[in-house]
Amino acid sequence: MNTTANLLDIKNLVVSIEDKSVLNGIDLSVQKGQIHAIMGPNGSGKSSLALTLMGHPRYEIQDGQILFEGTPVQELSPDKRSQAGIFLAMQHPYEIEGVPYKHFLRQAYNALYDGTDKQLRIRDFHKMLLEKLTMLKMDEEFINRSINVGFSGGEKKRAEMLQLAVLQPKLALLDEIDSGLDIDSLKIVCEGLNKVREDNPEMSVVMITHYQRILNYLTPDFVHVMQDGKILRSGGPEVAQELEVQGYRESQSVA
Image (cartoon, rainbow, N blue to C red; front, side, top):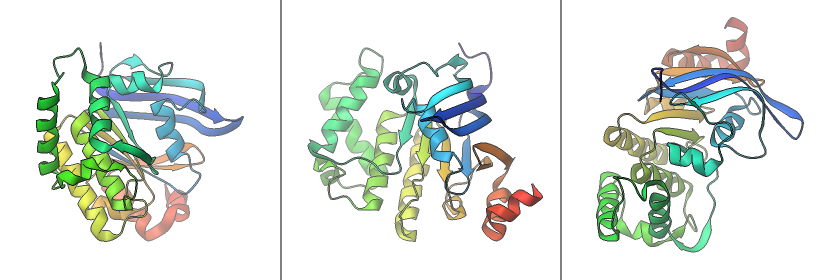
């Protein structure tokens, strides 16, 4: 049982990969419904944090705790973390030839909700899936295509938003969903995420990005600046605006 008001608590998290230190004492708390943006230059540890939270086996926790709804999850496998309500939207989603997107979504939904009060028969699942497509202004033909095969960058990111809409996680880890998108595609993806949040208002978001531009469409509650595996600065949306003007180096000198 969660005895705190936080959905996620990260305490003094120290992580290495192949004997190289990538996180050096991360502390972060996220409440239900909040958006936290994590910004920083390449190699600062942002993606390492997301992959560690999801349970990637290459990332070895040397110290610290990850508490999800008050329960330690650092020993859980990725599928168990997913069942607990954690979702990772990857920077570079995999392509899987011959597997229609609708079949993938059905299997993923079953893996999470079979045996629960959210279990759905095939007909009811298909109805729900069509409702999510309508909500996101996506054509039904989209889900008949092989997973990410031949998808544009924007289509891959919209597919991630569809997953969020269908699976309804408690925590969404978004690893550079703005990567490689032009302004129009970014706006469409962010509109989709805002629709998902309206549909699932208690979902929390930890969003990893290099650039302030995505925050023109998604307003974070907190912005954290990472460098060398540490969070060096935290604040409101104004932090991202300062980074846009000053850059990371100058910003750190005044933090």
